[in-house]
Image (cartoon, rainbow, N blue to C red; front, side, top):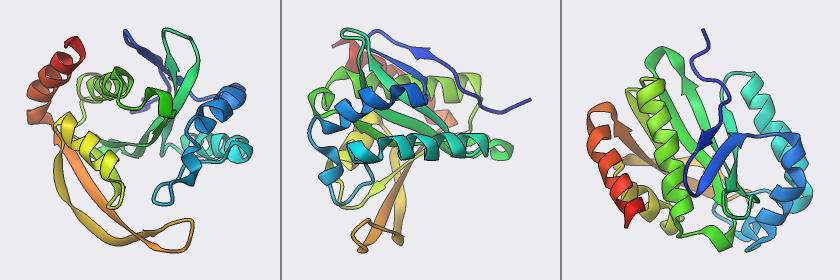
Length: 195
């Protein structure tokens, strides 16, 4: 039996649907909202590179390493970003949530919180994960703060972990939520959404 497979996760504000090459035009519009690819410390595709990025993520899915999603707003029915289960470790029941970006117009809205709640709920309650990890660039303060607001704990910093697109070194900050913390974090995220 496959540990994790593409699925639809539906919330009040957003729906996570399996990434498809049919989403390319909507994803090009979403990434242009804020010109997100100009952020030097993260990896967000340019509109003209979106087809290749979708194919890359779908190839990683075929290898059993990722399960990629498009993020659809429920109010407008438009796609506003992407996210993934990454670095899937079935034998140790661990996943990473990452490779996430949102159109500027939905950043700091309930959409990100709800998407994380849906992904975490599925990971801990359906997949029975013992840990869910998040990673981001040390320089991406907005992402680090957002991950901490979820209730994830910082595990450490992986120095010179990767190369940025400009050739500079990226230090990666690793966070996680473990199984025993999940009930409290779930309540916290539900409370945030209900405010």
